[in-house]
Image (spheres, rainbow, N blue to C red):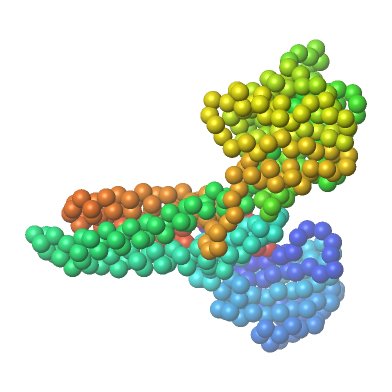
Length: 462
């Protein structure tokens, strides 16, 4: 996948200008290349050294601070040199070019973290957590990613793996006494042990949906008839005038999106064209079609109904169409004189529901005065089914969740087999399968295609 023999180099700080930029070297020749760039003979480990870096023609590039981290006590587990320079892209690129001229190779995306994984500095769960921590856009995303990096999930997996190993050892020994059944462990004890591990696993999976919501985010589509106040509401939720707002019906023709943080969960809010049954404008018709597609794909639908105008047939139709969806009904323009009572809308949609579901009520809002916006944000979280995250390891990664589900299925089969008195080898097969899933999560049994998929999404320099 990557060559681990080369010394690699890359800019480790984001693109653009800043007070400081960092260039990172990793590999056996890191210290020698740093010495060649500065004219020094050595660097004291873990001490910051102020020195000047020169290019190939001996012209000075920048005055920098260099720190040398010898193996194995570094981020990657190899010799690492970090060069802190002024944060000009021109300067940083010149340092990288000079390092390449002295024998380094430009790093591939994720190659530094990949080396840390290969050298046993981190496991695969922690490697993925590093990428998630870099990509975090909400405090809650950062918290979940840091918990993974801190090893909370890994520790829980190791506990379950150790518990299974304690069951596997006597069951393996029992295979030498085929006529005596569960010779070294009572069947009831085996059942209890498997059930205890299965309960721990179920607890992890119970938080998986919440964890994935935090990591991946959800989509909210704002729908309603023309001039219902959708774009004004979109702007208020986004905190900026992203959508054009006019008194002319059908102003919004295409989809507008904005990423916002509600309760620590990233939501992509989509403003859509006003829905009406007929239009002779081809562009507006396409906008309406896209609005319906966005509503169908959304995790939560905000049905905006203008409170200052009487309920129309279009409003009634939209309420019927979204009756079985995760949605919030928004009574917009609440700062104006009300033309209808929220209980009218509540009765309207309850009559149409085939299945009785919890009713969040109608949220009256005013994009002009900010009235009800806080309540609306809370209602969106409730409609999305976002529950409080329990303390402990959170499963936020789809790969982890899929493997844990496989392990749960294997343990369920093992539990059923033990209770029914099936031969030990069948129970053992399921227990080994569960352990293999745990190993695949942490990278104890990595597959090349999985590693490639994980590390290719990292930025260069990480």
